[in-house]
Length: 292
Image (cartoon, rainbow, N blue to C red; front, side, top):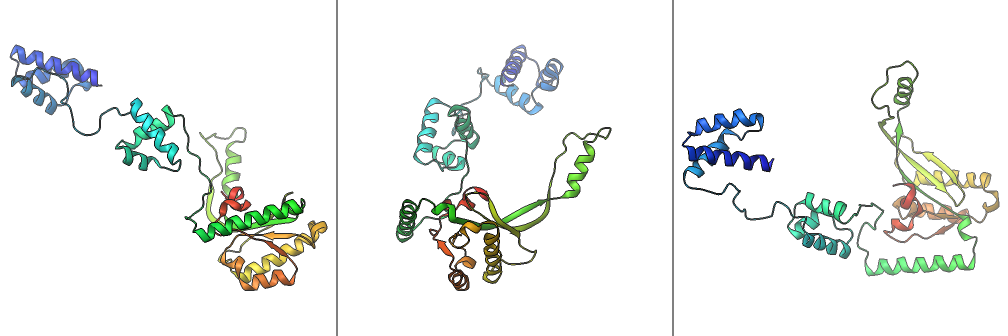
């Protein structure tokens, strides 16, 4: 496109040298270049400039960012900033380096061959006390595992999260589309329904021990969670009889998990609890990989 514009500017300059009027020049450009001809306003502007003595057909230098910013220097600058803080976003890098976001994105993906990976991060900056608690809990867990190598085999961890259900009608319709002789769409896929429900899941080192869906409209409070724990306890007795009296519960620090009634129930049933560091979803198996 830039080369074609340069050619037409030379043509306009040639017509000006011949003494052609602006309308005659514009008509010749349209006749030669057709739909790719410069607009009428551009022809009028360049015709006037050449008539006033301009010789150059190139654009005037512009202030601000250059048209092409993917230079070796900028690539090195982006690389340096990313290695200093790998959580930097494209927006932050662009503002820091005074570059376009698309330019930064191309440097990251094309020049540096980097890709973005999302993971569970600590949602807030921990205070010194919270960091100390996190370290203490980690050290205690390590010491317990070293003293009892079978400890992790007796841990049952659980959490709740939203779960999207697939529409069975959509699935059945897709199967009909793919049946022999039926009209085949470009892409048949199972779509998510608008209904979502809360799922509670508990598992150990072997497999899922207990799972259930929260009834619609039900809030997961301490009273409901007590019933869930009682059903979990009965499930453990039935499917894990070898650890029925020694299993250890692990859950996060949600308000319903830390309620006094819940602690009282666990104590009355002789169920030990593995502590969870505050604001540390990266230490919870459920938050780490089960619920993305």
